[in-house]
Length: 317
Image (cartoon, rainbow, N blue to C red; front, side, top):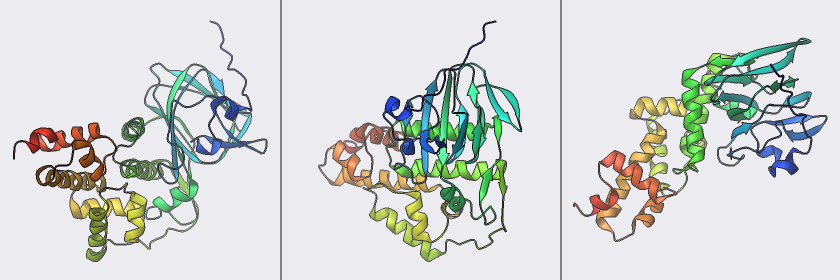
C-alpha cells in the first residue's frame, strides 16, 4: 500500500482562492496572521453577509492539512459528504489521533486551537462557521450565561444534523431564493441542536426567558405583512419581538402551528393569488412583489402549495 502524503499548506491561500479569509467558515489565526484554514477555494460560499453571524462553505478538497498551529475563530459544524470513507489525523495531548469517517459523519469543534489536522483522501464537506457572539445569543434560553463551547467530536453520526446541514447547503446552492429567513432558521436550528448535544457551558444559567405576548405576536405578523416584498430576517424579527431567535422560532410555531419560514411562504402565496386575479402584472413582477428572487422558484413553490402553476391559476378564475 502506498502512503499518500498530504501537500504542505501554503500561507498564500487568499491569493490562491481570491476569497477574503473573513468570508470563509474556516476562518483562523496561524502565526499571528488571519487566514483561511484550508488551502482550497470553496465550491459554494455564503460569505458573512447572507446570514448574520454565520458563514457556510461547501468544500471539495484533495488530501491536505491545516497549518501546524491553527486557532479557529468560529465554532464549526462540519458534515462529511464524501462518497467514500477517509481518515482524519490530529494531535491531542501530545499524541497523534486518527478517526475513520464515513459519509454523514460530523466534525464539531469550538473556536480553539487545531493541531496537526489533516485528512488522507479527497473529501467533500459542508462547513458552517458560527460566530461565538451569535451562538451565545441564539442559545441564551437553553444555555447558562458565560459562554458556550462545543466539545471536540471527530466522525460523530447525527442524522438530524446531517439533514439540517444538507438543507442549508441546498438553500445556498439555490441562492436563497426566499431571502435569508430560511437559512437563518436552519442556522438557528443547527446552533441549538449542537448546543443541546455537544456543548459544555461556563457560568450560571440564564432564566430570564422572554414570552411572545399577543401584542408582540401581532407586531411580528404585521411586520411580515408589510415587508413581504423584501428580504425578511429571523434575527430582525426576533429583535422586533424582544426575544432570542431560538425562542421566537419555538414560540411562533407553538402559537401559529407552523414555522416562521412556512408562515412567510403562505403569506407570499396568498398575496400572489390576489395579484394574479386582480392585476395585469407579469409573473416575474409578481414573483418580485411577493419576495421571490427568481420567477422559476416562485412558480415551483406556488404549484407545490396551490396545485397548479401561477399561469393556470390566473386563467382558471
